[in-house]
Image (cartoon, rainbow, N blue to C red; front, side, top):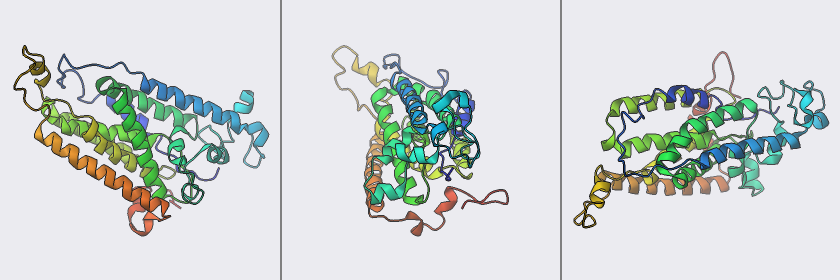
Length: 328
């Protein structure tokens, strides 16, 4: 299998295992009783969509028909056309690189030279194998459902999709010789949004230090995994910072007590401002940075620039060579 920059499969494990130990529980987080609690349906639909896309990809892959046998025999041949590529070619139990490329994997040269910008979006719905898919979907369930219950499907859906786009754009700027697939950029966007949500709603947390430290540890571990070979950490970084900025824009909560004041007799005459001043400041700064960042990145991308020429050390964010592995 041509080397793929497969987005972090371990992100789900890191988040899933640590999610239960965070301080984002009812005992440490104050949520007013009058605040709407949403029913999560979009995140489960995202999970179903990702699984359905993988099934379609495997159907089109049709290993028994297209495998030349040079890398070995198809795996799980009882699945017939849904069987997996030889493990030497794809150890994740998935399709071939050619099939992923055909179905919309991210490839910078095709995005720029063949005007296939749609790959920036389609790539976040593709996965390199069963293990890759399961890991990312577990992560999405553990993080996304809770966020959707608190903030609704519109805001979480926007964060997920725009963060995925941000990860794809940054990845295309730095990785131009390999294909990339996976939802990890979008998932890291949700992690980034969780962090900025903690900052922008700082005054209503009761156990601030524990919540912040726990979340930072989770993020650091998963970003650290990204320096391993075959993991597209640029998608992680791009998705994380996109989600981080979007969190300030989309996830601020009203000041504690504001909802109760609004429901007082008289319609809340003389009601104070809905948000704190610092929340407005963070909203404006984040919106400006988000728009400016996407504008600059997209202009660079479609001008065919290689971001590595402007940042000679940035490749270490994606892979750090050691005596045990190489990054070429």
